[in-house]
Image 1 (tube, rainbow, N blue to C red):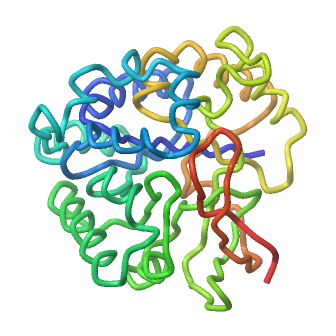
Image 2 (tube, helix red, strand yellow):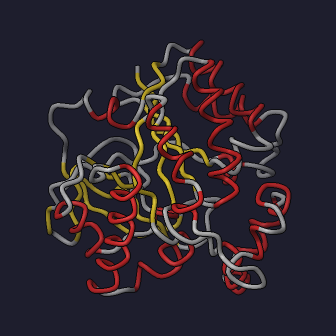
Image 3 (cartoon, rainbow, N blue to C red):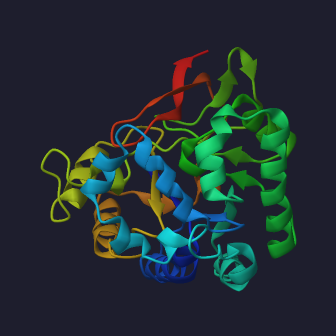
Length: 298
């Protein structure tokens, strides 16, 4: 049984503080994972515009954003200049790779991609992804082979670019098992490895779930392992920060359940052929707005 650990790194603080902590704990548990880095400016302060979106305040009220992200992060790109994550944290990123972990692209500018890509054209989408590819190549000295979309936000052009850039796989969707994506009858020849489990921030303070029982709740969901295993998305700012004790409970629990904790590439190697599924945009409980989701078999 395989459970792939997908680590989204959204911010400067998450890269600088959360990533090293996650590397240490993963090594201690002899677990593998894939780190997907935000490679350009940290404009997280611009997320304030989301306050006008339905459901945003409800989500924020379920967790302390300031506690996890810090005041400075919530001002970057507005009252404070945005630090360039790739330039300031290149040594940390290379250190993750040198420690034996798989690395990939999350995005260039997290807020820009998450908040805008769904409605953008091919030119905007290609420019934004090219910035990330160029910065990754500058940092690591080789072309990237994997992508994981910020906020599970995609469009048709972005999916096509996963194939054009020759990525081994992409993890841009929510779903139940790996598949070849189809967007409105167009087949995209780049495997999708969807996140199969809810994230901690989607669960916390809902339906009686607290920090005291959230690990137990997730472990109940993984107790009966599907043949295709699981992909769990964690965040450097959360599990690499205040929620590290919860993450350790999950690591212990998954290993007790018999899971092999692997990188996304290792997870992909377990599949010879993949079915085709539509990619659709729809809401996921605990998230704001529509996400790219694995749809019906095509």
